[in-house]
Image (cartoon, rainbow, N blue to C red; front, side, top):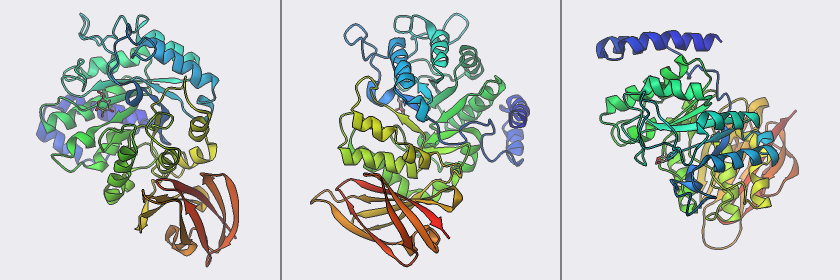
Length: 425
Ligand code: GLA
């Protein structure tokens, strides 16, 4: 693949000069790839990630079914295969923090905790690949991971090679415990190049902007050149308050981040918590709909062994997933907010649009909202007419509408109505 070759030669060049700051600055000036050119994440990555639901549970004696162990990942792999998750697109089964042994091995390599991962990561990767899935792993740019396990600082090449040797397909690279902002930026860049040098296709999931933000404005053009997706905002948790804060941050910063997204590189608003404990049904619908509008990577963090048929159907909704995975790859944005109703829209391929209306009023019952179709898609979404399909909360064709008409919808408190508009001639 030429993209890989380009990046590889750039990697080599950069690797040689990373210490020589002035020379490196000259090189940064050379126009490079606009997106990380590894051919991956052409649509937002989909999969499962253990963190929000299982956190750093290492106590397999007390809690054998929910501790971070190879058994947990093998069970999830089995279900992703047998319960239709892989078939609708959830492909990457990802390990987060707390998989490691507290020390590197005698050759300086990371190793999995021998009690919890007795077969080692290589064997787990084989197992996961055998189910037609891909394996993701976690490491940290600094001296320690966020939970205090060995960090990759000073070991980027060794770690990249170790992951490639094991057959890993995605790296979530966290940003705890870095010393300086220069270390943070150089570390994220260096690891991107080191992964590429291994020759293995490894999706690179960053948190660089999140850790940069308190000190300096992230340069998204640069982030996109090195990462397949990047976190911008605090960790999600299983509550409406958290989902709401992600949406609020995203719409408040949309001028800065929306244009940075596209095939090969995506803003990552963090995991889907659908199927857990904290969100009402309407709030789960809101998360699914808005993660589709935001072209977000879809990493579920839930327990696939115990998930309600309703949550499963929502997460496996092919029409909503199709919006998330739309090949045009343009992230949606908030169009307006009126009287606690937000209208979001996203351009899709074939001149179609997705539109989401969220009712943020938390008092009272369902509210009606009337939307003029001429106000959508810069006036073009329904010109001269369109077929409107409701995808959430209830699937069904609403019919053909003229550009001049309007649409009245009922939206539950903290819920969302998600529509698809297909233009007709
Ligand atoms: C950070 C990340 C989370 C998770 C934890 C693990 O907080 O943002 O997504 O990976 O570390 O310790």
